[in-house]
Structure formats: structure tokens, C-alpha cells
Length: 304
Image 1 (cartoon, rainbow, N blue to C red):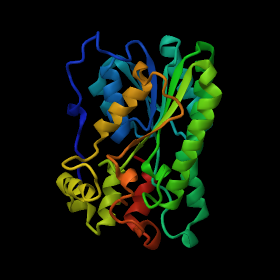
Image 2 (cartoon, one colour; image 1 turned 180 degrees about the vertical axis):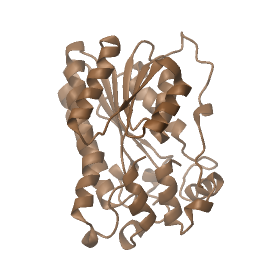
Image 3 (cartoon, one colour; image 1 turned 45 degrees about the vertical axis):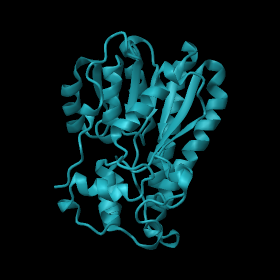
Image 4 (cartoon, helix red, strand yellow; image 1 turned 90 degrees about the vertical axis):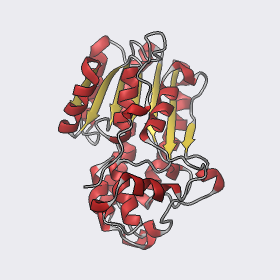
């Protein structure tokens, strides 16, 4: 079996009550049971937030709850269903009669292949999870944030939002759409003291990324180690001796969700070590378009 490095220990375990940046706040994280979402949940709870983890992976969700303790709550939620998302927001608000943070993180790789071979049902499904779900989440979250006249909305994006070749077509289109959503909502919600921002990381060794990177390298995913994956990712990095990890994304999420964000709204925080600035394509490049990759097709629909 492939394995992905657990990065929870990358965070300081000595955060004092004085240092907690989210003390008393309530945060929702969709897709929060594994990968980047779980890393964010760990850091947010360490900084004093009550975290509601929304996902469709109950076993992983319950396992994470045992690690995080009473500050966390798991809600089974399919972000494709508006009624599920509405119930999620109501549940989170009821914890402390407030909702401070909504982090839309759930996502899938979705449809892959050349543009002339894309199956439109798979394309539609990709946009439903990666774009439409964020619209639904913001819609219901701001119904509680507006009366409070405060709140922070964070969207998990991708470097694919600003650069072609960093993912398949449907994924790229959805992430670019999220950037438009962030800017539009930041303009509308600013007068209510609600800030809206996006984090766009490069390649992170998550379960989904593991399948994708292995396929792009022509490797059997069952025999690849974390070290192999890091070496593969590092080939396209600008910064030496550094591979982007889920803890790095969590730290960026903490910045945007907390008061550290200050006057930041409508911003796309590119977290790629300079890849997009240097116009360096990730390993594989046009493979997304010129070759259909079965492992991604099969596993990319399962989410991050």
C-alpha cells in the first residue's frame, strides 16, 4: 500500500492559551476527515477553535475525532447536496450560537483526458463538487455571518486556478471559477466585515495526489513510498530542499482565517514556492491532456 506522511507533528504542540488565535471561534471544514482538511482541523483545534469536520468518510472522521477530542465534531455531509450543507451550517452554529470560519476544502480530481474525449457527465460531476459546492457553502454560511457582521471564508484552490497544465481541464476550470467566486463574494460581503480568500497550493502529498503523481510517473502506486513521491515533486520545485506539505497549507489557512489576515480579502494566496512565478510545469505537463490515466480516472473521483 502507498503511504502519505502524517504531518500533524509539524505543528507546535506547545501553543498556549495566550497564543491561541482562534480561541472560542467555531469553524467548519468540508473534506476535513483526511489530507489537507485534517491538517487544518488539527491546527485550528490547537489554536482553540471548535471545529466541525464535514466529510463522507465516517471511519476517518471518527478516527480524527478521537485524536482531536471534544473540541471537534464530525458531521456526515455530501457537499453536492444543498440540504446536507444547510444542516451542517445549522449544526455548527448551534454549538456556540456563532459561526466564524467556513473553509470550503472538499474536492476531487474529476474528469481527465483530452478535451475531445471528455465525458460531459464526469465534467459536470467535477464542477458540482469543486465549484458548485463552494457556492452552496458560502450561501448558507453568510446567512449567519451577516447578522454577526464578522466572519472568514476560506476556499481551497490550486495553482491550476492561475496556470494551465497543472491539472486536467475540469479541475482547472473549477479552480479558476473559484477564484472568480472569491473576488465576487469579497466585493459583496466586505461591508459586513466578512473576508473571503483562497489558498492555491501546488502539489501536496495527499492520498489523491499520490495516485496522480504515481500515474504521471508511470509507477505502480502500490510500491511507491513517501520518499519517492517527494523526489518526484521536488523535480518541479523552485525552492531547494523543500516539498510542500499539508501542514504548510494549514498554516496558510490559519493566517487567512484568524485576525492575522488583517485587511486581506479577495486574495488568492499562491502556495507553490514560486512555481507559477517561474512558469515551471509540474511533472507530466501535457500528460493531463494527451494521455488518459486510468488510476486518476478511477481514484480521482474519491476526493482529497
